[in-house]
Image 1 (cartoon, helix red, strand yellow):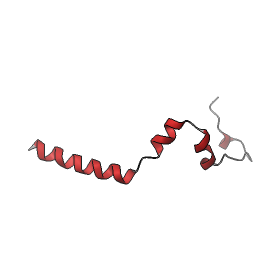
Image 2 (tube, one colour):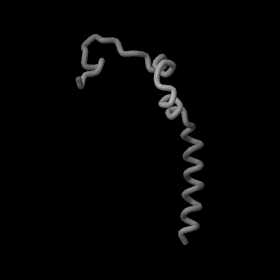
Image 3 (cartoon, one colour):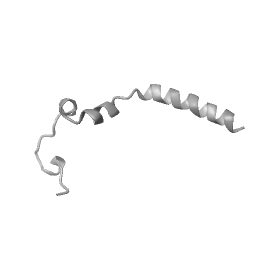
Length: 54
């Protein structure tokens, strides 16, 4: 219907920490990646691509 709880004045919003336990497990797993570690892997991989490109 294009509405959300935020559209209803005075409606309390669910606690996001509680929603993590009840939501879709796959989505929760995707949101839990270590972004710092992923950035490090990306930077190393990108550097190797630039070397291989020469």
